[in-house]
Length: 279
Image (cartoon, rainbow, N blue to C red; front, top):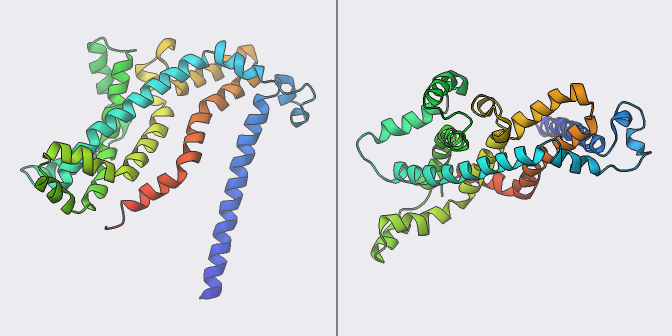
């Protein structure tokens, strides 16, 4: 049994190591390509940097390729939507986990069922409604849709965290004269900080990389996020041939989520595991 266990661990670590090496090779290739020229990318001298490091590719991508517009649009959509998701899902999850009222089970089941509804099933009715109201290419409509689509996940994820908190916190707050509203915001909300951080990171990555909905509701260049904007840039490469600028744009778009995950990876793991531990 010990030999089999060690063999399974070695095989697992070997596969994980291969996956890490493969990922770093791909990321490294894109990064080196962003510092090269287009002729060097299609030659065997890209890693030699015979013409030097071309940091101007990033400046050119940020200014002339409209990456700055797409980047700021995605930053606005992501920050506002993630904030709204937390402000809506955390009180809802708290109420569903601590109070029993008529329709409690039904509401909780509806939020759980909403997680299984594909976006493609409701995108056409939504588009028809938004078009009828003449609200297409509206930033606030897109942020509202991002929030509404991800609130069920936030509620369902935070339910486990609130259920694992002891009722003694609320009893002590009630004895001190704290109202239920302030008990939640001052005591219960900070106690589920690992879950809040994990939900925020997951939603940040989801909204930042979202493509299909933004393609439908934000087809004007001024309101496009990075996913749709990057796709339009790739299409334009057929005519301009500025491949080094395109790879520089890819690095700029990829960098926020990469840095966020590197800095907060431990909190993500703690947040995922803490909700499964009965405390």
